[in-house]
Length: 102
Image: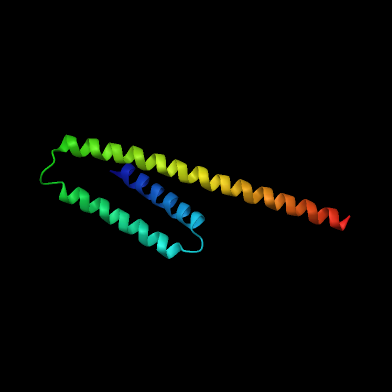
């Protein structure tokens, strides 16, 4: 149980950092969307408790975990692409400023 709690805290901080990096101008809206989707997931889990067996729920949750992990990797990839473009522009601007000084 302690390992689960540690992993949950780790992933929460990763999501918070990703939200703050990808949506710096609308952080409150991004967090509202995050909490809404989290609540929707809890609602689906609670509503499916009465008519789905345990194995069906496990398969569904495993599929959702894989899909969400793929989207997380895609989001990280896009953030790194944006960071590389910003770094390239910064380097280009710095070299232009150095050439003007010399």
